[in-house]
Length: 221
Ligand code: E4P
Image 1 (cartoon, helix red, strand yellow):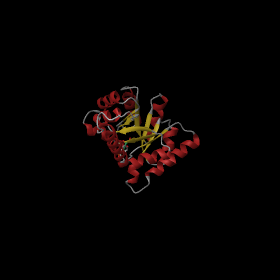
Image 2: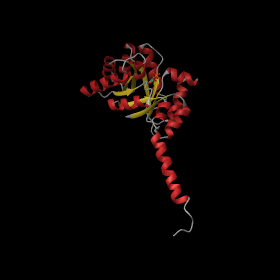
Image 3: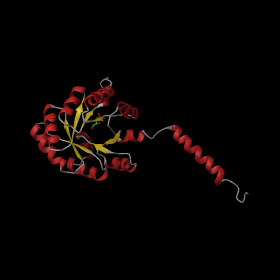
Image 4: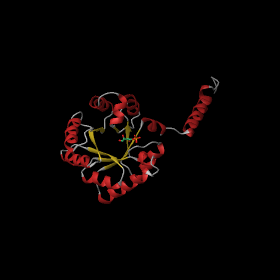
């Protein structure tokens, strides 16, 4: 499973990229707004940090507007994936942009039927939002499992990008379900490293090594 960072914060992206485990980035209008820099400028900066697919979302809501904006946004960098919402106009724009060879991320997917529409429209990927379904008391991960099964049944090329992942467990469950990509906040990527036995084990290794070599009396045969 590819790891994408779900952030528009350049500092977080630099840290994640330095670890060598970040394959791409997803942004949305809320994440861009948080950084206080206009979308095109911020997305260009992101492209200079992470070498992989970078999702940039259109804010137009009508078909013509989304296609126009999508074409402009795609010109920012060859790695841009245009994000269109899973509305009627969004799916129509997805179909048009995909036929032009512009990769589209069909976002705000909350049902297997919507994911089928995204695949039929030639989306490069679909983004089912796990955490937001959990927030409603539903099992968000079941949607990832359903979409992966449906896509496999028909050999759809559209990738499943598990989005709105809120914990390390979500990341692991998305991988178990067969998602092609998992996008996560920086905090969740950071949490994936944590295990007390790793810290304890390393501490013991270093103590043993120091005892054997650094504290040994000099001149011993
Ligand atoms: C995905 O592309 C979205 O930006 C994101 O995963 C939404 O996550 P949230 O529900 O935690 O805001």
